[in-house]
Image (tube, rainbow, N blue to C red):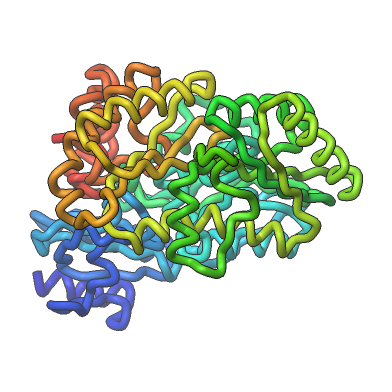
Length: 478
């Protein structure tokens, strides 16, 4: 392998090929959740798309070597880290972070894959426009990784997943060729949409090096509100009322059960929930976080929000409401929502599910899953929260109070997964809504994805990457 390393150094520069044992490469070899730890042959950091293509061509000539593309390494399913074979080259896109063009008239921005999502948002804002993709990890995650995993986030209700925000890509193929569709066209009906092959492919079909993304006008007014509901069905009914009243002005709608917010208050004392987590009888309540944005006057928007939410209390969908008066209050409410996964991490390893079912079935799914799990994992704490607006729930299980988290995960994860995914299937849902498949969910792909779908996916993989050079062991089951 020494000749390969020498050639890679010649391509990207000696300082940008990292090797070493022990902890030298741990930042690239371990996933964000610390569930997977691999051993890479090396980490390569190319600085241009041409260098990426040259790296791919060189690796393709080396028997037994494969490439794992990595952005911010914030994924939750282990899809961006190497295995332990020491034969994989981690190709980091962190040096590909140029903003190539902002086209205000076309409402597009073209950026390189390694640019952090927060930087894309800031560049759009500087031009007086909005890039609406928003995730808790936006300061670290990169736009290439967002597209490779078809990230969702908090504003899918209004703007869609990463796929809907992408108009074109620049991609290095498994043969080391550079293909580009960075034209910013909203209409291009000239055959297969190749862009959509690569969005959501988790680095298994090609390496995204740049993207042209859709921008939107900045809203003149924004109002954030918090409400409590007696049941999840009530939270769904409240969203229906808000959609009727605000239509496209409703841009975010998040739901959190009492257990999830109790964890936040336990581990982050500076964050306090604005409304009680239980009613006067001690019955836990569901909390919802509502984001409204409008091109019209903020005072008018706030008055409409307060009137609509008061009507929801009268109609029985809501128990109590709190409407923010300024941006600082709004940010504080969002910090509560975004701190839930962090609080779970502090509490200890947990069983995570990223599921989606039709909105009309959400309450039924949670009730059925809660009941089914009592026979499988009795006493586990149900930490349920997520993007109610698009039917995506993070339906997680934490060990019962006083139980050791790691042993809980090891003892119950497989049985809990099978139970939850069986219920998801009954309600017409999916076992992966926005986190992707990676290494973690491959068994579910094998067991639950229809055979014709798997066959077509394998045919696409074989056609575009016949040598299996790109991210083997991820997404597709053996």
